[in-house]
Length: 394
Ligand SMILES: *Cc1c(COP(=O)(O)O)cnc(C)c1O
Figure 1: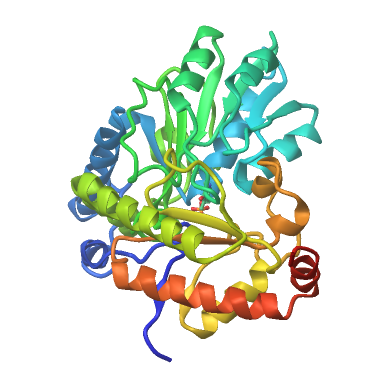
Figure 2: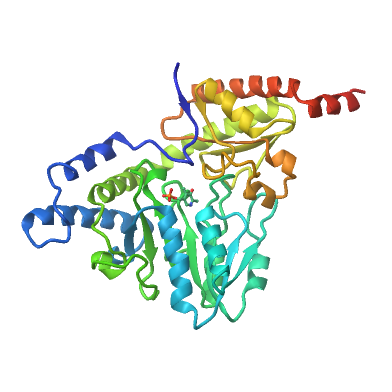
């Protein structure tokens, strides 16, 4: 196999070498339990505190508002289920959107089976939540608004500041899944009126299996994992010290070069979208053209199956996705693409390419060349395409 081109950074990223290096001593040398009293365990405790400080500073929070979890999915589950539990006497209504990650959507569906009511807001053709609909959906018994910061499939950035403002005016808690946004967009939880925020290490060049939930002081949700007194009694379990250290390092790195890295990615992203639109007929960009994650490209090719395209790209050493990693392998079209109004047959032909820190222009050119060749090949085999061309040939 030749060189691999990795363009699936929304699924996961490479753990940065500096991150691995920072983690290693906490497997071998300083393996002490961070919750012990002796000095050896204190080494682990210090490292956890430092990571917590880095992360708290990164979002304008206080250290005692950061709770480490096992990743984005756990953070989402915790925020939503525990809010429901703690505030059920106030009301049993939750508002979210149709384009959330399954960690949010499936959690909300589970709550619906357990006596809660959920409103799933529509989005516009670009994937932006409609604020007017949000305002209309609010009821006296609404206890939580959970809207993602940026979408993992089409990259659209949501109007989080406005949503936070609306939530605050109505005295409703606001949770945001910022797994894709954190490290790519500056975030300040106070300025944006965010009460809870989910994040995950492996989406920003940190390790897998570590995340955090920011919980604003005063939000009264309880523990989701019962046991020991770790994380101020709100999340039991021996601290994943190497994971936490690695996460802290990854956040430090991501913030240090955010501006230049995202500027470079944005330029490559726009170059890629332009080349595809110009050189491949019957293609369209999904998501917002400019108000999108710096590293996200999502395109539909009419008359082409996304899965076939992915397999043929893989044979050329190019890794992409046809939606979210969780849904590939199933033949259902993406719920996000359906929510922005694409018909089933077009939603099936989508390709998501997400750039990373190491992506260079040559990777983009090689990928566009490959996509162009494969799309042409697949269309030559497509009866639908043949029919269409016959009908429109004069
Ligand atoms: C990846 C992802 C998650 C899940 O995070 P894990 O750490 O893999 O559990 C949740 N939400 C969004 C938007 C994601 O992209």
